[in-house]
Length: 544
Image (cartoon, rainbow, N blue to C red; front, side):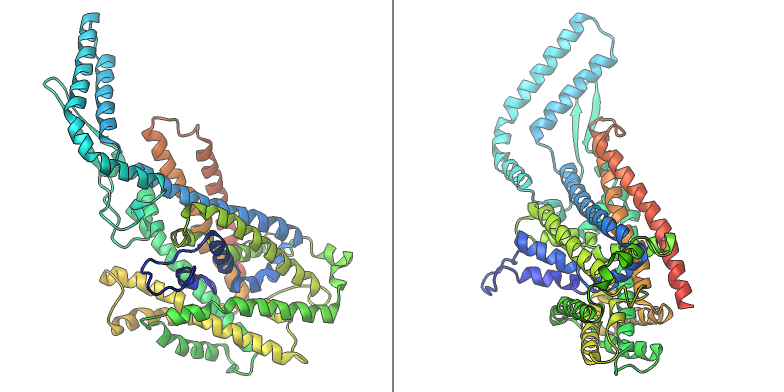
C-alpha cells in the first residue's frame, strides 16, 4: 500500500522481540500500531500534497484534510462495528434462554390469537408454567454437563475474540422445534442465517463482512474494487517512476523506453516465491520521502527565504485554482494520501490488544494530519515566489544546477524503493485471478507468468498513456480508494444494523446510527461521482 503498507505485516510480526524459540506470532503494541498506520499513510502520495494545496487552496487544504482524517477514522470505526454486529448475530444463544423464549412466544401467540374464556386462559397459563418447570428439572443434568462449554464461549465473546473471523467451522443456523398435539411451530434465530451459506474458504475479513451484508455479489464487488485499487496504485507508482527517471542520467530519453526498462525489472520480481526481503526494502521508502522533503525545504529557504509567507503570496494561495476541477484534484490527492481504511482488519489482527485499535487510529490520524499540513502548506508557500502554480510532484522544485547531484540521488533512491513496492501490489492482483482460476495461488511458475506478466504490461502501458503522476494519483484517490474507504464501510454497517434492528422489532428509521450511515453514504457517493468525473477528464486531457 503506497510505499510501506505492503511491509506492514512483516513489521508487525517482528515487533516486540526476535525470540526464535517463541512459536507464537509477535503482536504489535498500541504505540507500534500507531507508528505502522502513520507509515502506511506517509508514502509516495505525499509527493503530490503540494500539488493538492496548489489546486484546492490553503483554506480547503487545511480544513478539508481535517475532515478527511475524521472521515477515514469514522469509516474504520464502522468496519470494526460491522464485524462486531456479525459476531453478535452469529453467536449461538444460550439453550435455556431459547427454550424459555420459545415457550413464552408460543404462549402469548396463542393468547393473542385465540378467543377463550377465563378458565381456558388459566389452564393454558398453568400448563405452560408446568411444562417449563418440568423441562428445567429434566435438563439440569444436561445443562451442568454443558456449563463448561457455555462458559468458555461466553468468556471468548467477552474478551472480544472474533471466532467468526478466525479458523474453524463456519457458523450455521440453529433451529429449535416445539411440538405438542395441538400446535407445531418452528423458531429460527436469526432467520438470515439460513439464507446465506458460509463464505468461501480463505475469504478475507472485509470480504466476510461484505458477504453477510450484501451477499455473494457483495463479495464479488469488493474483490473487483480491491483488484482495481491495487492495480491503480501500481499504475500510479509506475507513473511516478517514469517521472522520476525522466530527469536523471539513466533515462532512455523516451517515456516508452523507460517503461520498457521498468517492465524488464518487474517481470522476474512478480513471480518470486518469497518477497520477505523485497517488502523490507520497500519500507525504506519512508526514509527517501523524508529526505526529499528535507532537501526541498532547505533548498527553498535558501533560494526564497520566507518571502512566500508574506501576505500577498498567502492571499493568492487561499482559494481553489480552477473551481470544481481544482477541488476534485485536491480531494483525489488527499484521499490517496490517507487511504488506510482497507487495511483496518489486517492492522487490528496484528495488534496485541485489538480493543485499542481506535485509540491507535486516533493518534495516527492526528499525527498524519499535522505532518500533511507542514508538508503541503509549507512547500506550497516556500516556493510561491518561484513556483506560483504546482503542476506536478514535489521533485519539480528541485534544482537543475548547483545541487543537481543531490536531486539525482533522491530521485534514484525513490525509483529504487518504488520499483520494489510495485510487485507487492501486482502480486495480490495476480493471486486474485489465480484464486478464481485455480482455487488458490498458482504453484507452477508457468501459470504465474501467464497471469502476472500481462498485469505488468498493462500497468506499463497505462503509465505511458497517462504521463503525469499527480493526475493519476488524483483520479485513483477519487475513484477506487474512495469507494473502498469512504462508501463501503457505512453501507456495510447500515445493512447489518438494519438487520439487527429488524430482528429486535425496533423501528429502523428511528435509529440515529442508521440516519448517520445514510448521510455519510450519500455524501460519499456524490463526492466520488463528481470528483471522479473531473479528475478523469483532467488526466485524459493532460495525456492528450
